[in-house]
Every structure is written in C-alpha cells, then in structure tokens.
Amino acid sequence: MSAVNASTPYSLTALLRPSAMAKLGLIALVVLAIAAGFAGVAGWLSPGRLNQTRLVDEFESVNGRHAGFRRNHAKGVCVFGWFDGNGVGERLSHAVVFRQGRVPVIGRFALAGGLPMMPDGPNAVRSLALQFTLPNGEAWRTGVNDIPVFPVRDAQGFYDNLAALSPDPATGKPDPAKLQAFLAAHPESARAIGQIKNTPFSSGFANASYNSLNAFRLVNAAGVATPVRWALQAVDAFEPEPADAPAAKNYLFDALADRLSRSPAQWHLLLTVGQPGDRTDDATIAWPAGRETIDAGTLTLDRIEAEGPGNCRDINFDPLVLPSGIGPSDDPLLSARSAAYSVSAARRLGESKTPSAVQPGQKGN
Ligand code: HEM
Image 1 (spheres, helix red, strand yellow):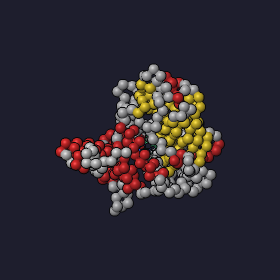
Image 2 (cartoon, helix red, strand yellow):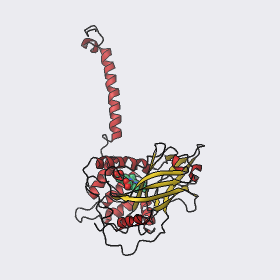
Image 3 (tube, protein in one colour):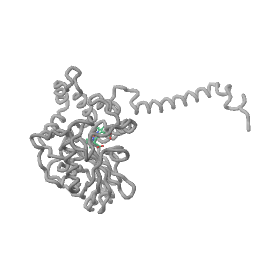
Image 4 (cartoon, helix red, strand yellow):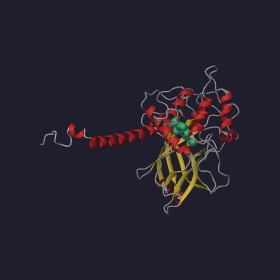
C-alpha cells in the first residue's frame, strides 16, 4: 500500500498549483450546472411557476386537506370484473388488450371534486377509472368521465379554474366575479362548459357512458399510427337524471351497489378514429359527429367493494400507464395529469386512513 505524500498528485501542494485549481474550478462549475438543471426541473428556481405541487396545493386550498383521500375524485368505490377483447381493435393497435381474449380489470367509480364525504348530487361529474392487467405483465390504466369535453385545455387553465372556484373568505362561496373573469380569459372553457351543461346526465353510474376526452395514439403491428379517443358506452339504457334527486347522501353509489347485486353491468369499449384536422391537443373540442367508431370489446363489472388496503384505493390511475401499442398524443393535459396524480398519490398513500363514505351494504350512511 503506498502512502500519500507531498510528491503524489493528491498532495495539498499539488492541488494548490494554478493548473490544478483551474481544473477544480471547472469541475465545480460542471457540478453547479447539473445541480441548477435539477433545481430548474423541480421548480426551485422559479417558485411562482405552475407545477404539479402547486396544482395539488390548490386542490387542498379549495377543498381543505382530507388525509388519505384523492385530492380530486375523492369520493369513490372499487369495482371488479373483466374485459373481453373481440380482436377488432388489432387493426389499429398491437396492444395485447385488443386481442381476442379475457383480461381481469379493477376499477373505481367516483364523483369529481376533492370532498370525500360530499353528498351525491345531480350535477356531479361521474368517473370510472380502470386498470386492465395484461397476460404479458403490462398494465393499461385509464380514467374516463361522463362529460362530452373537458372544461380546460391545459394545466394553466385547470389551475386558473380551480383558483376561480376557491371560496371567498367573506362568504365561504366562490366569488362570481372571479368566475366571470376566468371565463372571459378562457373562451375555450366558456364554450366547453356550455356544451357540458347542454348534455344531460344519466340517472346513475351504471347507465352512464364515459369518455377519455384526451386523445391517444394507437400503433398497429405494421407500425401505422392512428389518433383515437375512447369511450365506455353503457349497455344499460340511458335514462336522464330525475328532476328531483333522491335525498339519500349516497343515492348514486347505493343504486350502483343494488344494480351490481342483481347482475353484472357492461360497457362497450369504443375507439373513435380521428381524421386529419381533428384536434388531438385540445380536450375542450369534440371531434365531429360521424367519425368511424370501432367496438373493441366489452367490459363487465360484477363486484363492488369499499376502498381499502390493496384494492383500487391504492392505485394511481395515471393516464400514461400504457401498454405497448397505445401511446400518448400531443395533448398537454396528459403529462400534467400524470405529474399531478403522482403528487396526489404520494401524499394520500403516506397519510393515515379513515373509512370512505361509500360502504356498499350499509345504506343511508
Ligand atoms: C391538468 C388537468 C388535470 C388535473 C390537474 C387533474 C387532477 C386529478 C387528481 C389530483 C386526481 C386524483 C389522483 C389520485 O390521487 O390518484 C384526479 C383523478 C381523476 N381524474 Fe383528473 N385531472 C386533470 C384532468 C383530467 C382529465 C382530462 C380527465 C379525463 C377523463 C380526468 C379524469 C380523472 C379521473 C377519472 C380521476 C379519478 C381516478 C381514480 O378514480 O382514481 N382528469 N385528477
């Protein structure tokens, strides 16, 4: 073993030579540049800039902090079943899920909004989140909503909308002037919200149809890419929401549990093919009616269970968890969703849990 002494290149004398000092300075600069790069990506150099943490903080400032629950779509229940692919989708995508065959599915029905104990309401947006577990070890996660278009087109619009909805400390309610200002600054949202208001809600979760709203890119075995949006179209007949919504706090979730106790409920997975000129980067704009639509198979849900350890409660339905053959489009909402869901999931998964509002089998709670 050789000792380090004044004659080795690592000695203090050697390191203090001007040429060595210049090299050390250069190394320090490179390290600083890398650190600044990481700090920039993390948003530390621009604390006012919108990022996923600020987005999720804004949910908490509007709704309060509800430990253990999703920061959006907070009130929900887990469901289980399977998907039967019919092979027709293989024309558009080589994803295993589109082959003929059955794959298990775990899902979650929910109401949009950050209040886990809120009463079911006639105008609450309903959602269905799904995880398809594929035989080759891949997973496909998708979240779909029962509205025709999304109210905002990017993360900034989402944040501005949330901020406009935050309660005025004086009244405890959103300030109508702030909402008006939001709509004036975001005409695309004013248009989309008008379209949402003109589309009737169904009477329940089981007879609602749910839309991906975001566009995706399917790639088939020949390498041909096709823009699509997908929908889960209910087999149960549509009935509009009754004028007088029932008073029970969980009437929508209770009806879902009743429905599934009688027989499984089903939805067709419809892939709508985009044409040149159809916007793939703006979920506030619907594609023209009459686009080719392919029925790729049937989702069957036959079991319901309260959120609990290891079931849908602990899944992050990140829209970018995609199998080979399904890719993201250029829609900026997709990466914003993925980043925000990961912050929401990281917070809630690390927090203590209280039972969810929806406990199938215990009505009227
Ligand atoms: C920038 C835009 C968006 C933001 C910031 C946002 C935020 C969130 C957050 C924080 C959650 C809870 C995630 C978790 O803790 O697991 C969530 C859930 C959800 N979001 Fe979004 N969202 C956005 C856009 C969309 C869009 C375009 C859709 C379209 C379908 C959508 C559908 C859903 C659904 C279905 C859930 C519930 C998932 C579940 O049951 O776990 N979101 N969202």
